[in-house]
Image 1 (cartoon, rainbow, N blue to C red):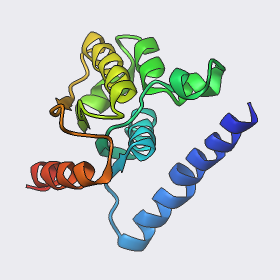
Image 2 (image 1 turned 135 degrees about the vertical axis):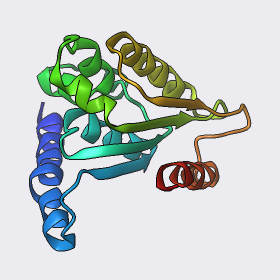
Image 3 (image 1 turned 180 degrees about the vertical axis):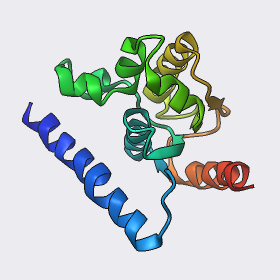
Image 4 (image 1 turned 120 degrees about the vertical axis):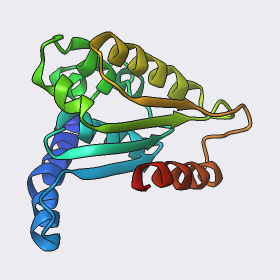
Length: 166
């Protein structure tokens, strides 16, 4: 439980302190983009799924979106809250976040190469949950030569940023 409470404190720092600071410092009052690779993708997606009022774009590369895998069987309300697979699956079909999420750009990508097995599995679970709720996203599965590693993430990030930024 302590581990999840620490994670929740970090989440609150990002949403309650850092995001308002960015708005104040830059003058930008719109929603922000999140992005990350591996665990960074997990956190980037979690931010958007939990707070689509603050974030409107996510590029997640090789993330694990099912917290059950990361928690060695431990579960509680905070694990559920911080697991996009769990939270989207449990979301009622009339939840207001569904419309908000459909106004977002959601891009999740994983390769099919080395060290991507669990990421592919959790990405598939999230894709099914989102399809069931009618939430639109771009799930992109790259080739068997695409490993869970920085050389590929650099290529993927450049590719997806060019799509998002025009």
